[in-house]
Image (cartoon, rainbow, N blue to C red):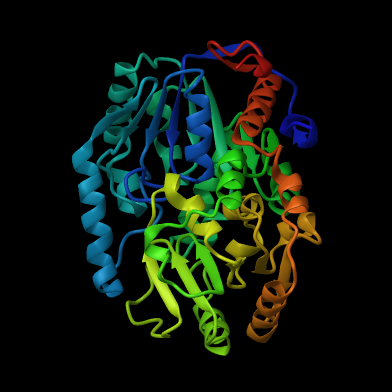
Length: 408
């Protein structure tokens, strides 16, 4: 069953046909230093096979604070390095722009016109004059008028106003405006969709996809990354950003301390203080390019998601869940709403003691990867993109060269 067939859509009556000759995406992440497995990046990969696509690196939802210490200087330095790249063609039909912008209220007031001008110039070099503008970073709404879009998509994949250290009122205002202006608002969380669909002109649910063949093949291979070969087993792995708005450091530390015989492998960039974990059975691998992530997952005996209990997490639908299941290892996680749709495939825990017990059980019991893989094998990014194109078509919006979703 395709995403289009299985995903509910709340919509106003279709409008007259509008054709877009390209896509401009206000990304929620920076192409140069964030993991490229995110929803917006994956969808732009798929759409760029149909029309020219410009990915605009995140213009930011929060202002870095000096009080963050070394992390403040790290954030500023990496953004400056990104700005220096400017406009880069990644491959035919796909390019990345790092516009100079200022986050927060001051940025919204000062850089709106300049931001639109930078983006419009880059888009025109790609032949984009009638764009579909895709907004995955809410502050992008302030540049919409300057881009004169033929159609607008709002990617409401998270409860953005609940992100750590953002101006909640400002981001909530952007969110409300986007729901009023967007031809289609896309949700990845069923609970968030059910709650907010009435606020939108039209809405569509499509959860994350997965590069199934890549992850399943890695899970079936016995090859290991060189950096893990010397690490003892059993190994319990977490792959992703280690950030305070998602990750639960106290829970993880208690779990790892209670399982000294287990080697915990953390793969991903970390924004927590450098001394947050000094346990001898925890190994930090650091950020790994998306194309190399699957073998790191496969080299672990159990994969975990130790999330905190927050508004952000309750409305989340992490990309890594489907990747973990495609790899074919046991999965242990704290709870969030979307797990209700994966019953029997993920061990859940509320407390550190429950989490540790679930890991022990996963290590002790034989694991059959078949059911998890079967659950996600048809949930490819191409299928998700077809569902979105069909939803846009119902709104009277099409991409040049995409007469029908099945013709891509």
